[in-house]
Image (tube, rainbow over all chains, first blue to last red; front, side, top):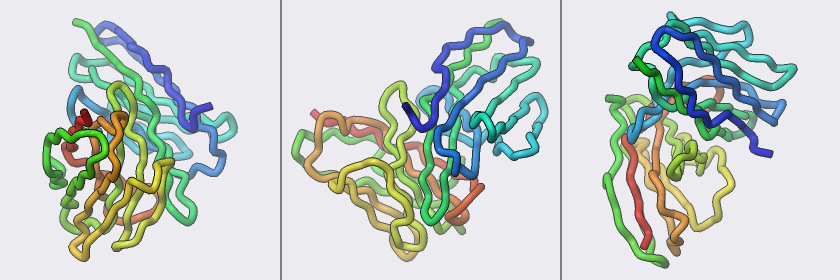
Amino acid sequence: RKEVEQDPGPFNVPEGATVAFNCTYSNSASQSFFWYRQDCRKEPKLLMSVYSSGNEDGRFTAQLNRASQYISLLIRDSKLSDSATYLCVVDSYSSASKIIFGSGTRLSIRP
Amino acid sequence: ETGVTQSPTHLIKTRGQQVTLRCSSQSGHNTVSWYQQALGQGPQFIFQYYREEENGRGNFPPRFSGLQFPNYSSELNVNALELDDSALYLCASSLASGMGNEQFFGPGTRLTVL
């Protein structure tokens, strides 16, 4: 079993739709969680950190469920510019960092 | 632009050779992490350097080694290159080691091993 698992997609949704991705992690000691966005042939960029209480940034909402060991990302009113690969990231930092990326979920928004 | 730079941008090597990749961290950042990203996969954590010391390592063999310099720039060295080492190598700098620190990625070095 992979330490961080994501549905690879692709998710192909119309502009304006709401789309949600989940990401599961296996290490219950994981402490920090993030969503990164990666455009084609570009480097990953932080989309948002994921806090225990959940957090929202405009059209984006991230949730953490420690009991079931998953994080989620919800995108409302999707735009063409949201087309990208979304990477789930888990940091199991204790005495040293161990940063695990999921394989990514591809999202394609169609007009 | 993140302020993280990597060199070279592209590199072609043959199996068995050695390669050194370089990364300059964003100003004020003392932590650098290195990743390998194969096509269609997420970045795989190689290791992290914090104040010139290795501070965490992923599941990569010892032929992957690194350095961090007093100015916090970093090198990734790979010995005895194998075909499977062909990938995009990303470095990321962050303000400090530890939880919750955003990583700022450089544009990557694309390594091809023939």
